[in-house]
Length: 366
Image (tube, rainbow, N blue to C red):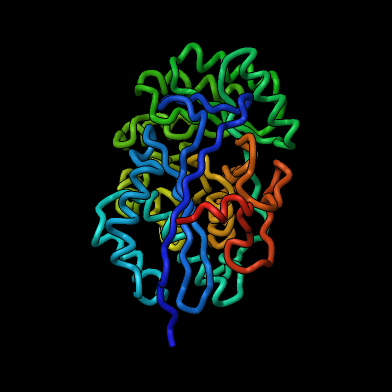
């Protein structure tokens, strides 16, 4: 008999970013995460956990909106329904709630976690992998002068050796920041992320200088829908990564048709769940485009989901992904952190997400 979804519970969690690693991007600073954790219990007693990694300045969602929609729309639709196929539950969420991909992702992660635990396999296996068990990672650097120096010192102290610099905050300051980051990092891997903050003129001026500094890529240089402009920038010789331009499969196909990116940043929150994130990666690969795993500042559960998706993708960019989890925060939500040394994050053979929440957080579910 197929297990059904018996219980859906939520718990609020709020963590502050580590002060020296605070990200200051074109969309504003990310100094704390007020997220929502999700627990699903099946009729067989199997538990699955997820995380709604949503921030209003980025996605228009947060823990408050997510909890409201899970309780009033998603839970009534899913309770007593079969756990499998998970895709059917995801389709049902789309029918009862428009948009809100990060909220749906939190529930979807928990569904996939429960499914993989039912099979007693890692989530990456349930998603069709793994194609790899180690994922190279990088960390964002932001701030100016002393702030940037403190960020770099904190990042290297945590073991990181690859970075991307936040730009899109004013071109002269952006270029100064990247030059200083290059001075600090020496020959280390360095990319840039404008979060859509540049005009075409800014980007045309910036990219030749970034290329001369040995920058490896420019992420989301223009506002999300300016695909024609992004295509023009690719002709300047620096790879373009699309992030905010790509949330779903339709967005991805638009980018492909416009030839607007060399690499696409995919992650579980934007895609509304791990299975859909993998399908996005497969679709990109079918069109000859690599993907990497970006970040919305995920906590431990979200970072674990990102890790399993990266492991399950048939084609992953050689550029480091952004699976950073607890590295960004003053504390961890996991009882045992992900296996990460700042250079790589590694998959384990534990079932499901392969992680466990702290006991105090487990007591918060309602």
